[in-house]
Image (cartoon, rainbow, N blue to C red; front, side):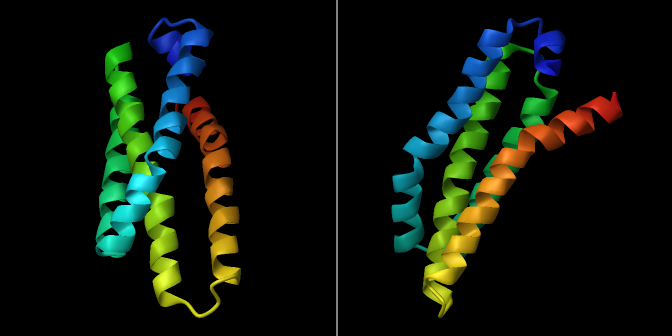
Length: 127
C-alpha cells in the first residue's frame, strides 16, 4: 500500500502497473533463452541481474507513475533473463539434468512469490 500512499494512486492502477513486470518477464523469456543458448550463459545471467537490480532500486526511488512503469519494465526484462540464463547454465554444466532444474524452478518461484511479502515487511519496519 505504500505505492498507493506515496504516489497517490488508486489501488487498481498499482495492480495494473505490477502486471507490467510479470507480462514482460514472461513474454521476453523466449528471447533471453535463445540468447543464453547461443552465447555465454554467465554473461547473460550477469546482465539480467544488473537489469533486475537497477530496476528494483529505481522503482524504490520513483516518485511518478511513468518512472515506476519504466522501472518495473526493467525489472521484468531482467527477471525474464534470470530464469532462462540460469536454466541454460545448469543444462550445460550439471550431470543431474532432471533434478537440478527442478530445484531451480522451486526456488525461483519461491523467490518471486516471497518478494512482495519481503518488501512489505521491510517497508513496514523501515518506515
